[in-house]
Length: 445
Ligand code: ZN
Image (cartoon, rainbow, N blue to C red; front, side):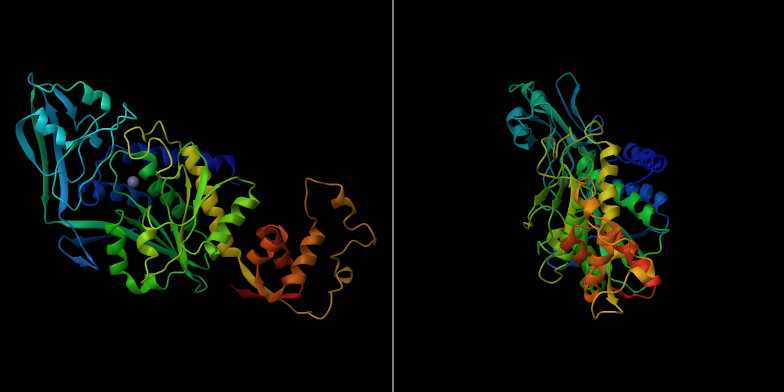
């Protein structure tokens, strides 16, 4: 667990990122995405930023035109702006084409989106691949519109050839280990849990890991959702086909329960590690089996790649009431919640790093622990203290005997933990002691 000073520092950093990034109008392309990546690059100077021109073919898809918007509103007869982009950027459907005309309510109405069941919330809508325009407003606002009024509709946007922006950075690989991906998307406008919380956690995660000696490689990917993942896979095909697995990091800072969306395999190493992490920390969590919807796992796990990716979240997308509405704002998320999820991610990666296979150098019968100072000198006391102690489920001697029993070169530390309920880090500590005493041999997992 993190100490208080460190978590206070991380909380402030997360708060600042939420404050800086929240107001920016982002979409799958455009200056809002670039500006946001620029802010993240201040925290991750090694981040590499890439641009792919509009019109570029990426598998079955094409990089769309770049969208930028300066202003938009619906004005009434008196010139009052009753729905204004400058008040809330969620009001304009993303990728809306330019409009400047007066129209009757009957015509305007076809371009309005509301949520009658959540009348205070402005829904978030997009139209990336079909040229269209639209406004999103609260149902309360909608009810105030007058059927007999002519409205002024103005959208000052442009949709023209430009490029799609994404960024990445790879760290670790001290021992030529495997490569894992940590992918997040950054394409929603002023929406906090889905989706700003994902890139903010990913940024903090990078900074927590970057100075550590990491045996495995970690590829951090910041993309616009769907088209960005497809473009990324196209441009990094060979490396991605070698990926051992990873995570799509999204919706990590809500007030609700911690959850885990499994990889498409359901019982992959990644799934087992996540379950073990929750178990060791005594945290209840909700499990969501893989389904081919959700986020970029759809691309990463597609037949050509089959990368097992999971998602650890706190208030998973689809599941919370304010999902894809203006009420998913800075009052809804909290950096404290984000740090809870960050701790789980850090703990999973720590487990990937310590995992290994050990081979006993004395496999024929038990090792005589007593002569090496590893066993209590008085016989008979073992298990007596543990038996009456419900707090501690295992003693150090349990860890040693289980470890040596399982150190046959087949069981990884994760296997050992699953079989015994003893934590991977307790096994790791004993493994290092026994390795120093020449009793076991380390083999990279
Ligand atoms: Zn979303």
